[in-house]
Each structure stands twice: as structure tokens, then as C-alpha cells.
Length: 102
Image (tube, rainbow, N blue to C red):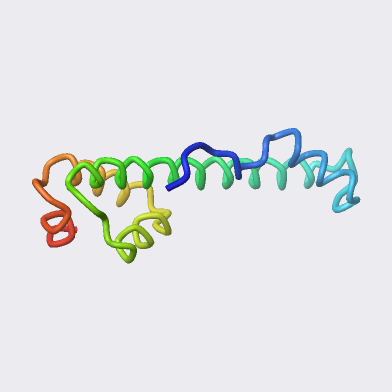
């Protein structure tokens, strides 16, 4: 499990790439809108990844977490579901109990 958000580009990197590669003109309102959409999506994905890693960290206190379960948690992007799973992970006595209740 890798911690941190090293894979999420910074806001400066996103805007530099948009304009330096001539995807959209620098003065374009569309470019700003696209930039903000990309940034917001990257932030949301980073938050989801962080929440998933927290769930796996809690579950690992109970023992080994099966790879299939790790993959299911790490690929989930629905913040509400991840929040629900995080609360569940803190309440159950084992990984098996978590899997049975998710």
C-alpha cells in the first residue's frame, strides 16, 4: 500500500500542460474551466485514494487483507461508500466480519 498523493499533479503542472501543449489558448475561458474541472477531479480521486488507504490500514490491524478486497477498496471512487466502509472497518472485530457486512 503506497501512502501519499505523489501521483496527483499539482495545479501548476496541470495549467502548464494545458497551455504549453497548445490544447487551449492561454486566454480562453474554456481553458480555465477545463483546468478547474481537471483539478477538482484530481483532488477528488486523491481524497478517495486516501480514504481507501485508511480503510486498509484499519483492516490490517485485524490481520492480512485479501488482495481481492484490497483491489475492491482501492478502486472505489464513491466517497459516501468509502466513508461508510471506513466507519464499518472501525466497528468490526475482523476482516471477515468487514467483508460480510460491506
